[in-house]
Length: 433
Ligand SMILES: *Cc1c(COP(=O)(O)O)cnc(C)c1O
Image (cartoon, rainbow, N blue to C red; front, side):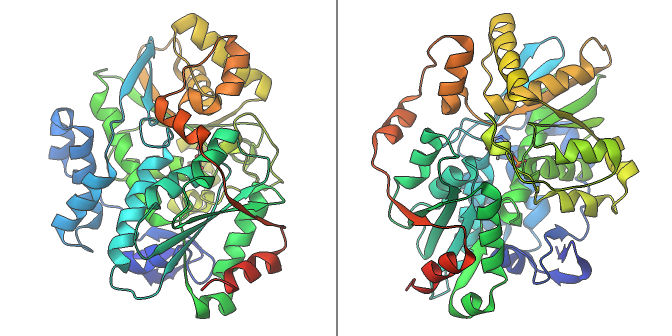
């Protein structure tokens, strides 16, 4: 399959080129030239397939033109090492729990797949491949764990100092080996700008091989479509229209869900929920897309003021506001509302939400509560224990921390400190051997 730049459909790349570059030369993001539908037979038998089997089938559909099918299968099976269960909350509302991977958040799926695909594409390169990643929290831990000890690859993780949770920070500052954490005196948007500037910097690109692991990289984005099919397969609500809600920040997860739709997944309505960083809900309402500086919230992995993947949704719909607003309904929640949702769902239904997933629950509820002809799931993007300080304060009870998270908390951190000036980051990279 060929991939084009969102800035220029004539600028195309192979899968390998797109994965190694991350961003197209013209600053656009790569998109599949054409997304083909899966065969009807796939949807007829999907209920009998496990999540890993579904992932392998979708991976064959996406990648068999570019890699030997046996390698596609091996990479996918190795990446999909945990389940993604569908859990019933109440009435017609379900959640797809994406937090059973090594770092307890949905980004494990894309990060594990990308680490293996990039390792595959670079095993014959004799220079180190440098992965640059900006994180507002969960990307850093998922990418660090996905790439940890992958030979030939060094990962540099930029995070906004003091703006990620202590536990998230431990998950990517304590690994060592081929993982370096860079603490930036700025916001997530500053970190993202530093990374984007580095990719377009000729001096650096002459000296070293740089690639991204943010959700802008296709190798992270495409495998995220796998679990939407699993949600559909596990849901037993015959005759009802399917609604899917996605808590969003950079909008990679929603983009992948919409790609699943383009591959034939019968989705009646996509819903997206944000915190007060509501650029996209505002755009859906008004047709005006205005990035703004990000504001800190208790759902900090969604504190994004300039969502990098939304250009892919513009691309899929030929920039038509009318079509996009029809396909996606948007909701936004304040910190106070998020806390109320967590409390209500815990006490009313015995289900504990993390602050991100809470927005997904509520937006789905607002769309389909009380209807007979609709059922849906929201993506639970993180385990509540990852945000236990907030969650404990809200429900007034201790949250049980899984043992592997406790071990991570006890380890020592190591970070390199940077200002938000590009010259500082460039100097750090140029000094690299
Ligand atoms: C990254 C993240 C999000 C946002 O996902 P995007 O793909 O960036 O929209 C939501 N919740 C959690 C817990 C995350 O880590």
